[in-house]
Length: 265
Image 1 (cartoon, one colour):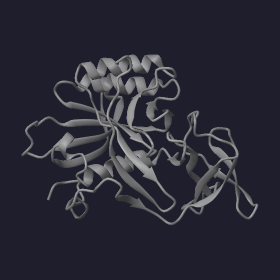
Image 2 (tube, rainbow, N blue to C red):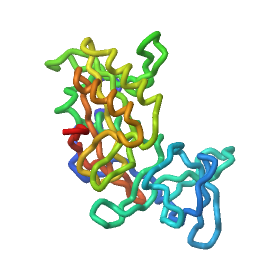
Image 3 (cartoon, rainbow, N blue to C red):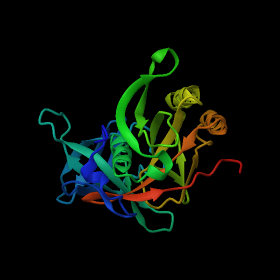
């Protein structure tokens, strides 16, 4: 049995639109405000106002809409100060229809791992024998990669795979963009990915947390340095695998890969 892979899930590759993750139905409300980065006041249908933890510390461009519909989940830890977590936000989608967006950035790695375990990326990655999380690597071994994937011995490419996940919610029309603000940390990750090439494979996996997008690109208007580093990394062999997901009240679905659009092309 391949290490790190859930074979019960891997028996059948998921089709586009298939349920990837389910959970108890989220509670809907209206966003009043988000403040101090981590707090969001939400009015429930009964008029009660609760304060939810906001697990996205960025500017949330195009997603942070006071007066808009949101979905929250009850906190699992009884000792948590905030008893709710903000999970999803409704926005106007690329075609003018309502679209639910996942705002809980802690889900991104879990979702990408699930599509790998389900074999959805086998054509891109090959068969994977082992998945390891938070592996130390990089210059002076001061970085951690989201996933290190050990290829199965039957793979034509025997190199190990360093895979970094980036949660993506900002859009321009139907084009998903990352980042939505200056990210020195993200710039560092690109440099570290360049450093593992060509001995290993380097993969950036944008987690597109909304189903209305049809392509992915860099958010150069927010961080031109990141965009330039991205293009340098891509030129020397970094692979990009944008993974798209649909968000619903009781589930998250796999919506397939999206193509990469290089800025300037």
